View 1 (cartoon, one colour):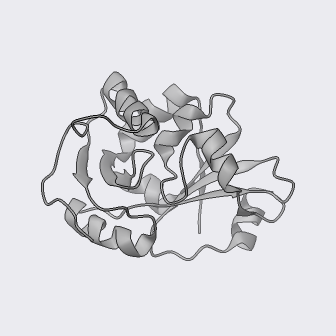
View 2 (cartoon, rainbow, N blue to C red; view 1 turned 90 degrees about the horizontal axis):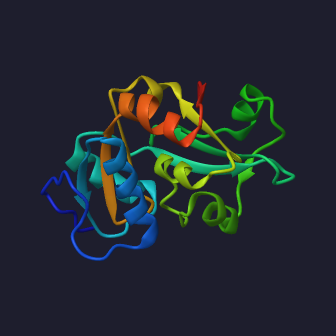
Length: 179
């Protein structure tokens, strides 16, 4: 995979897909600083490992989940090397067994495609149908890393900016879980 070794502190130049442009507009509006690297599509955690090495922070594993009835949706942000056990998480949040949400729900609610689910997509969830779940390690880390709603770029953000600026703006309160 090709990864630019150059850090950027601004959006990519040129025309961007609407969901990526909206993510950068949001960061600019809120005054949230970030480091960005561009790379080939990184739509799984194996490919994100190389990006993590360049950024100096692990790219979060972001899972878009739902209950069996597809009435409750969750965005789980967790460390990339931690295993996901649906039974344990379901018990922590008092939910029926969770599974991966349908691709069309990911687009409808977060304006993301598989492999690009991100905390930045919560800005598109204006009806607050998605509950953010943060693993305690992600919550406690000084930085977190995510895609800007597209998997050809990755951002390094201060976790404190996400918690005190981004999430209050989107109206989402995270539930901290221990996986």
